[in-house]
Image (cartoon, rainbow, N blue to C red; front, side):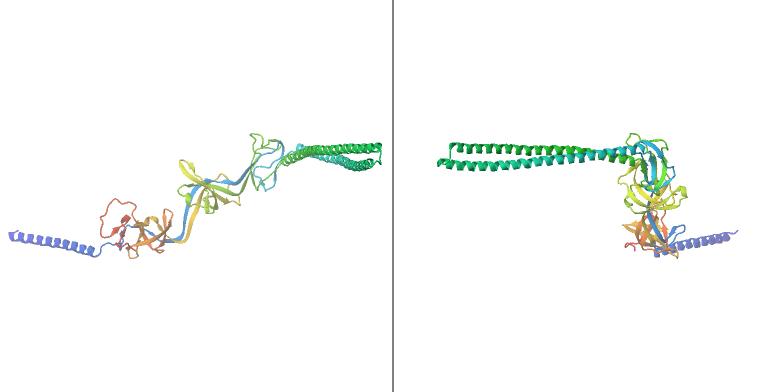
Length: 455
């Protein structure tokens, strides 16, 4: 190859290189112009690989849940109140109605005790009535004696007054010389005798009255003693009748016999004896109670009357419905965790639920129908304002300010700002890169909030 040919070949290679460099520079300038004219402000083209979620509409439930073990709504241990031979008992599993006889103890000795106590009461009452009648007769006689003594005293007073008047007249006549000394002396003796009779009548009257007062006091004490005997006999009869009644034990409520700890022919030991055991146990199976363990951080949301969904492994998570009936006033420490027991009553008309079954209770705190729901992760907060990034149908994105309702930790209710069917973008769960600030404020996860506060 000649020198001229080599020179032309080099010139051609240099020409192509310059053109290629020029094209690269022009492409870079064009890209820069596009970026400068269309900066990212929260409304832009969606990037590939974004995680999104639809805005759904439906019923939103806020609830708290916890485990528990079913217990009978009512349970009673029936013990004998008297000792004796058992002549009737039901069997385990028997259904009993309220007021039905469930235990019978031989009443023979207790019936005899009632008869004897009744006879003793009748005797005491008869003695009281007889003494009262005798006392009445004796008192009537004493009152009659007092009346006679009063009459004698009155007569003696009259005789004394007459004798004194006669003495005064005799003294006047004697002074005039019309009466003898003997007549005057006789009149004086008559006064003295009348005075003596009056004094005697006064003593007799006072004695009669004092005797009556003493007798009345004595009689009253006798009657009180006899009345006390009557009362004691009546109490003995009442106790004997109660013991007789206690030979029969009745079901305090309708339910099922869950345990029998005695047998017919055995001896029922009175509950007053230390260490005595129940003859049988009755449980009310028409409803069951579920003591649900609720964490102390959630107990403040629970109220009596709230609805509860109860599920059991024994029934393949079939849902049973109950109601909160009680909340423990203080916490119980379980495995170093403070929990509160919430009692849930669950109707059990068919008897499928049995005490001892483990269950899970979900207490409904709040229910919102037709709520707009998005994942809680889609919400980002800037200066106490909530925003989500919406993916538009054309692939662009828009930052929207929203008003929030309640959440359950996973899902979030949106009160305003979104519509059902829209799509929201979920921020990346974790990021290891940092971005520099620009003319817009960046929210968590890369959300761009335009200057001016957004919408």
